[in-house]
View 1 (cartoon, one colour):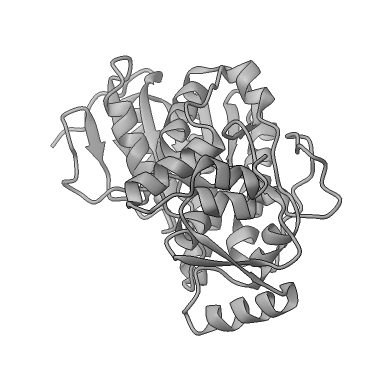
View 2 (cartoon, helix red, strand yellow):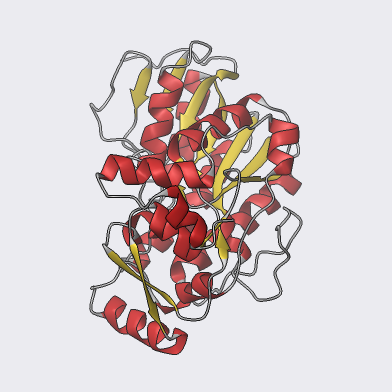
Length: 339
């Protein structure tokens, strides 16, 4: 068959990676419904998974040699003006090599494909990359260094991806680059450390510690990416819900029961259970139960116009309602130290 004529790049044609996971799949659906979007390119979706004539699926393995050329050709032929790179594991996995290939090699291939094709690149990153540290400020601005523990492969590859994208932005100023650092995402389809933990009735927490935390509702995340695609502002943006809650209060709002465990015991316990494949996360994540990691979302509000529909309290409450859990009363939550 003859190749289709190459189209002039336009942001009404949006290419998306990570479409086999919840965020990428949700973004495909979000842009499919957008009347200003003429086509959605699901770059790593299963062949034949198109949900409408507006969606085009390409079963590209982003980590394979030659993936960059394949992606670049798809972008040129369809005139894609915007790329959302969301091909990152949303939760820790024991398949460390597979994760590394996807997130490190896959990101290099995506960036190579974007060098002379799209005009807008939006990367999914996460606020947990700031790290949970006792000397963190009350609100972490985008200029704060990323200090997450590199001992965790889950965090290490995402830190590397941010560095790769920063280098790309410096070398190719013709591509407008935005990095959306989302708070932990919760919602009906969300996958991650927080959704995994709150599926349990009893959730271990660090005895004697109760740091503030924030989340982001899944639906607000989709809207933030839409705003970022349309905007011309570059750089990193913290995308978070309004308000914060102490960890124990957040669990109560989600209908769960905090189970205090001494921090040293909790760290060892999670490490052992992770090795046995009996826990959702490993020892390094105990830091987020000890120290704050709360990001400042004012830049996204000011420059992208992002206004979350759900506060942290409301996002967790919505999760609890959809999961059919029994929530404590507002008075109980307030008594537990709501912030």
